[in-house]
Length: 221
Image (cartoon, rainbow, N blue to C red; front, side, top):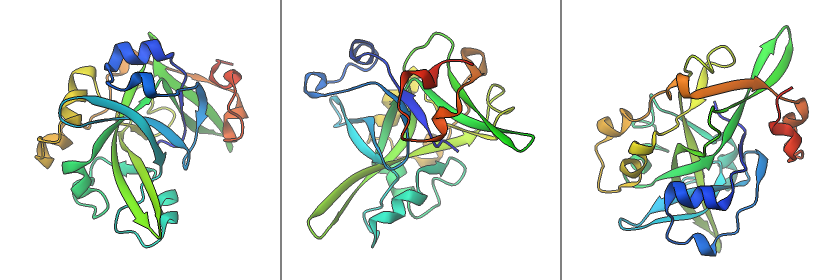
């Protein structure tokens, strides 16, 4: 699964990587310990331009009776994303990129859970494959998202058996292109990222609490 990540990259790096049409309108601050139910920086496309914005992490489907369902839907499995009622229509029409520069997983080591940070070796910003939806009830509107996961690559497998789908740069625009609606084709994009470009290291247990959103969390022990 993916239950925590970071997004600390400077605005200049984000704009260079994604060329967002509304970058001047955005207020992006470093986040060291992003947790479910919080707002996450995401990218969508209107067919011509890519726009950045914030979505609540934990998908609330448009048909849900209660918005609290989002706490149970922070992730979608790539293997079943085209068959689950909550996700299959969104796979065709409401895809997004969720921006990060690292994510965390916990390794069970003799009864103790040791957190690890996983990132790119060159520290570059990257994106998770996501789905989003709009929920409205009693005058309240929630724009929310879920992160798609896949089997772990060789960097992550010694820590956890799942990892978020990280889309290579050349696949990001395809993922955002709403005219692409072939579910079988889209599922082929949802693969483990190349392990040779990634690294993992132990970090402080400060990350265990979402209340701790401080720079010390991303440092190696």
